[in-house]
Image 1: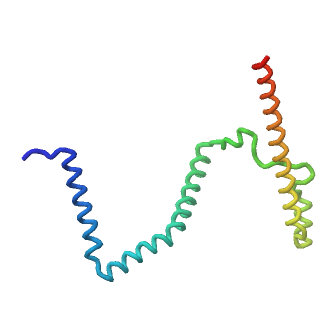
Image 2: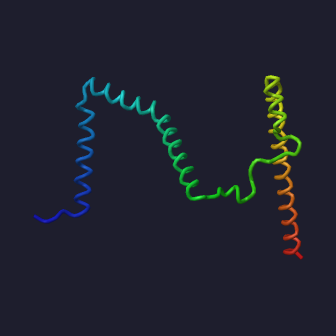
Image 3: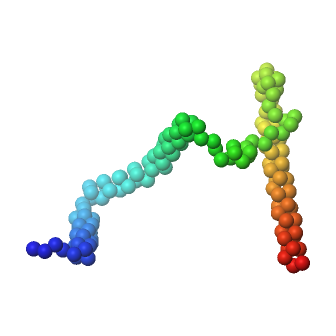
Length: 145
């Protein structure tokens, strides 16, 4: 007996799969359908939690590996990060005061700091866009001139 060719094997596998798949659902009784619904429902309910758990584990593993290898995050090389605002940063005196008073107004200070950081970021972006526009104008002058 000769060896079957690849197309013959693929058609045989396809026929077996379709026959077995359709027979699996046509021969199910009520108990089987309940089992399928429970399995699919449990999977649908647990999947987001399993994904979060996997992401946390992967993040821990990545942090451990990067700490061992001494890698530097690319944003640290670019000089990006938290924008420090002079006179607005947390000081030790402020922390001691807040603990004594019961942290009154802390949320307002945090909100104000965030607002100032956002405003600075928008201003830097606007200045960057202006510089790009000026360089585009200079290039256009050279090209037309």
